[in-house]
Image 1 (spheres, rainbow, N blue to C red):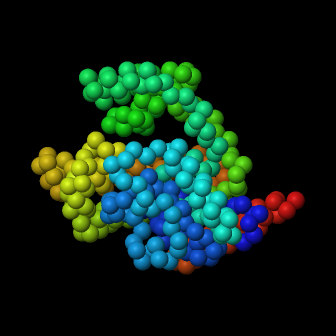
Image 2 (spheres, rainbow, N blue to C red; image 1 turned 180 degrees about the vertical axis):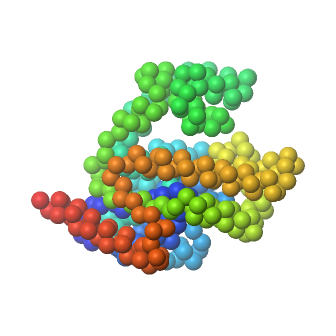
Image 3 (cartoon, one colour; image 1 turned 120 degrees about the vertical axis):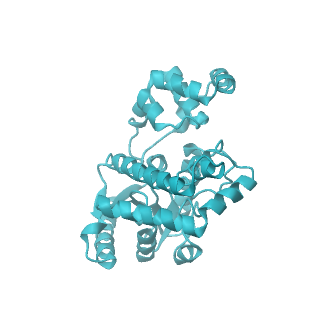
Length: 322
């Protein structure tokens, strides 16, 4: 692939749809390297609950941005955008195709759109006031403050994610605009062209895959993984431990409910997350959707996807040569 053809292939879809397997095959077909857009797989030590690619899968195609951040560290979308775009440029420089694979909507937005996080100045004094309120009255108090001003933002942001709650309040304080309106102001990036491939399945099949995945996580040792993370000093106060699969196991370990209830909650929360992901991805008007349930075999689905990507790459290449 020529270096002047700056086209990025994005493979996304709801959790458990099969992104990892298809991204690997697509990377092999187009001399690509995979750049993860998953907010959990980026953390070290969190392998089972994040459904991180196995060593065998990682050996089939070069992977980036997997297993690189300590789960104790705070990690923002702005930081992800910076390292991901640097990675994209390095893949371009090597003459290969960047294949973005993942289902974290904000991470994808940061690569698809020109999101300039530096345009939102931080108010140190205002932030300190909010942090003091959280310390004195609890994080729920600050979250309720956000809910009174921007209900939709409060519904999207977990009360324990104090940093994000405060940033939303800072945005309101500085601009009078909600987080949602700020997000909707993005324009497509000019750094490269994006070919958006969305994978989905019929709902019943997707939910069966979610349930099977959770059962497999338990059998692989998810509970033991959470215990190990706790031994490293991690708790539900860490953003990394608020991910689905981790946040449900912690109360089980405290004896608040039994393992069956923890498993039920993980499955339920994962299904709800998949629905939210699909709602998010449907905002991308240029998304080319493939319902994997409608193909007779995985090979047939893969062939159809690869042919479509090849056609789109030709179109992008022709545009760059005009």
